[in-house]
Length: 153
Image (cartoon, rainbow, N blue to C red; front, side, top):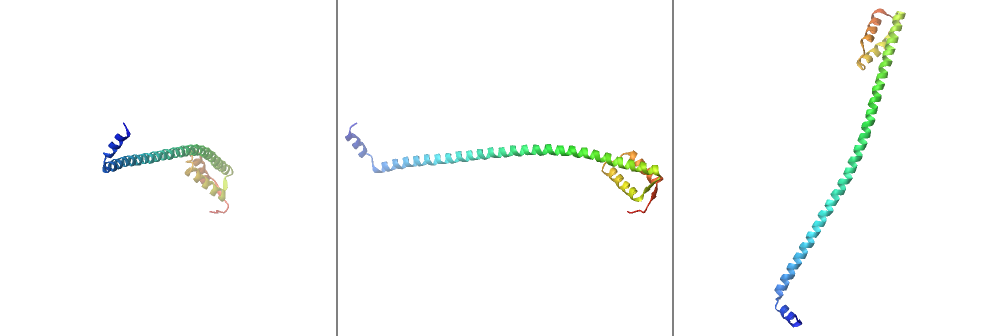
């Protein structure tokens, strides 16, 4: 194709057609740019959501690990408290039995010792759900032992 035929072809196109085609091309390019920008924003938002999700997952895993440690510590505390309760039960039972046997042997008990004995017995029954042997001893002391001294309660 020579230069003259190109100019003849171009001169045959009206300015309106050129403006129309230019407008169409600009609209297509604008639509492509706008679509690309929207896709980029959606992708960026998606990536941000994924990043936040990973961070939240790490936080959840960290909290789970902490809760597991707390749970283990609580189990240890419960076991320790159960052991301590058992020791306290044995100590209170020993004190009650020893005091009752001593009073039964002597045939008397001071009013303050009896008051303390009654308080320990109430704790023994209420908290530790004490046994019948201790109840039998307390009943024997109440019936058979003489109370000496001034009653302080």
